[in-house]
Image (tube, rainbow, N blue to C red; front, side, top):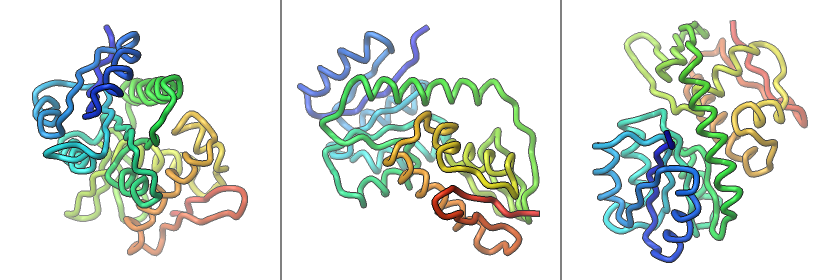
Length: 226
């Protein structure tokens, strides 16, 4: 059975060309309107979402935020003509897994889709156990961190990154190992994405002095925790 993709793009020509190529590999539901796309997301199950940013009624950032409120697992890829670093960072902070700038290569897009779908499939098969890190309890299967009565929901990528750090606690993790494990490639732009996710984890743990994610210059990172 083909994987099902939610594709949201209001440029009819680009949407036709992209959907035509994607439909060779996947089932594609295309919408030109952010509001209609979210209505469809609420009613159907999708394996991955591809979103433009500049959309009528509900823009791509708003749509991604709404999707993440309902589902922290489904991979999200932004395809946008907005090239500013701030836009890319905003998209990633909202929980997107990747941000491709137009014009993009269909071959690259399909490769990225395959990486995210394979990762999702592997994570669905592997049952992870709840563990403790400092004053937090981490439930990787449900992408949740708990501290007392506070429950913090992580995105799938944040959860996978934290799990990788915990599995290598108090040891140096090379940047290329993290990138290959989570993104499938050791790429400069993916490295910038990784830095955004690490920054978010640091903010979550900032009030627990027993937990630190240390920068190891020119090498990688180390999670220091009891």
